[in-house]
Image (cartoon, rainbow, N blue to C red; front, top):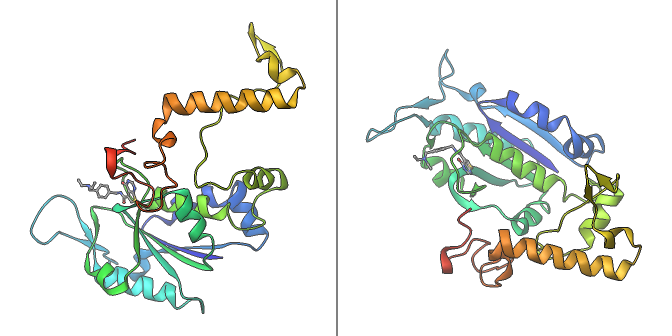
Length: 249
Ligand code: 9D3
C-alpha cells in the first residue's frame, strides 16, 4: 500500500513512522509512506499556502491553487487510482469498519489541513471523503492523518506480529465490547492481589470471568456499545448514532 500524506508540517510524522508497527510494515515492504510538504506547491518566492477567508472571519484558509496541484501531483505518482481522504472536523467519524475498508486500498492520499481549513473548491474539483477522528478540536489534520495511517496499517495482512494477528482473528465485529482488566507478574504488589480465578488455570472459568468483567466495564463506560442501534457496527449510520444522539464522547 502506498500512502501519501500532504501536510504543511512534514516533520510531525517522523517519530510515528519510525516506530512500532508502521516502521515494521514499511520495513517488510507492505507499506510505503511518502510525506509531501505542501509548501513545495506554495505560491511565489515565499511559497504562500494560505490566505484570508472571503467573507471575513478568524484564521486563514489553505489555497485551492496550492492544494489541488499538490493532490494531482500525488495522484500521478501511482498507476493505481488513489482514495482521497481529507482530514477535517466536518468529516464523517472514523470507525473500525471504515479502516478495514481503507486497508483494502492500494493507494491512499491523506490531506492534512491546517489553519481553519481548505478552500471548498478543492473538494469540488477533486472529490474524495472527509474524515474526522472525533468531537474535539485539534490544531490541524496531521494527528488525524497519523491516526488513520496507524489504524489502517495494522490491518494490512502481515503488518502485525503473529500473536497480535491471532488476537485480531478472534473477533470479527466492527468493534468489540470493552475488555476487563489485565494482569501480569507479580501476583501480589503492595497488597493488591490478582483475581484468584486468573491464577486457577481453569480455562472455562477464566473465559467466563473475562466476559463478565468486559461486559461490566462496557456497561459502565460505554453503554452505547451495548445497544445494537447505536453501536459502531451499525451500517446505516456509518458508526455514529443518529437516534439517541449517541457517540458524544
Ligand atoms: C471554530 C470552528 N472550528 C471547526 C470545529 C475550526 C477548526 C478547528 C480545528 C478548523 C480546523 C481545525 C483543525 N482540525 C482538523 O484539521 C481536524 C480534526 C479535528 O480538529 N478534530 C477531529 N478530527 C479532525 S480531522 C482534522
